[in-house]
Length: 212
Image 1 (cartoon, one colour):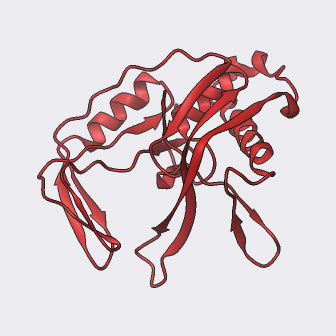
Image 2 (cartoon, helix red, strand yellow):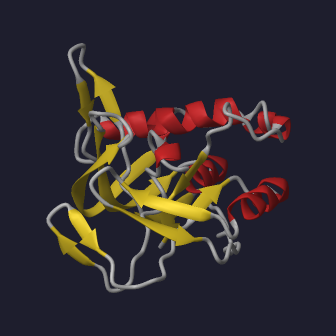
């Protein structure tokens, strides 16, 4: 697999800062250690590449107002779950889906009636794009209709606005949602969503999940 700009199928969780205190839109960090989960296709070559690139490197988090620097001390793989046609997930970073109404981008809530269809269309687009990297998947393309796939939102979703492209004079706000959900769909699609992120803008750290 060639790791290049075309291959953007990965995501990462929100960083975890033990003991941190929220102060308005800022976070006061009281601990020298932090952690986050980076999720991508289960591929040994890519995993080795990630470890070599990031271990012992400086990682800076923040914007023009405030920032923090960390040294990546340890990169370790996590056990991957077994994927089945029915699974429960919990977001570890906001999940984003949007539509363009001709005037502006509208970010959808999981409670919007269009959300479920767009969710699975997004997964199918990811599958179609990844087949060129993994031609052995081509025989799995006999998927059921989108209407047969189900997304069930569990509990009350919580909206969260994240500013992206903070290097620009005007950062770009993106609204996603934190929530638990149940999916009924082919196991291959669920693995793609888990490994690469559900929804949109995954390479900005949206749509990362853990299995419940």
